[in-house]
Length: 88
View 1: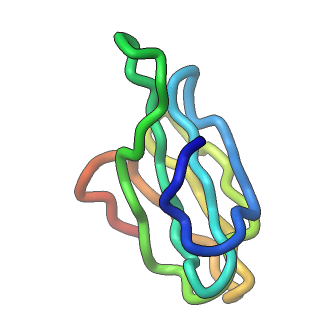
View 2 (view 1 turned 30 degrees about the vertical axis):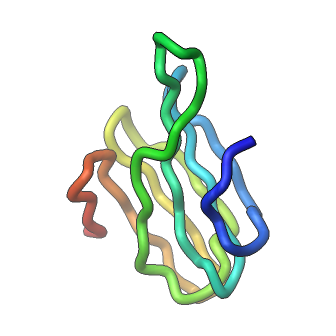
View 3 (view 1 turned 45 degrees about the horizontal axis):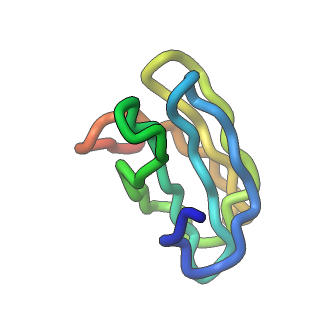
């Protein structure tokens, strides 16, 4: 069981063979990135991305290092997969 979101999880998507992202409902509105630890074979939290002001409804990979999210706040955001991830 992976914990961290404080509201419903609306969407999950694979970003690679070992990484996936989850998007949460309002009031959480965050995206969390999870990665597989090859040694323990368990997933752990890697990033929390903030910026949406309402529920995150969809996440889709765009490339090996970027993905987009769509929200009920009427925005689409593009994210980079790194600890200093910023929207474009």
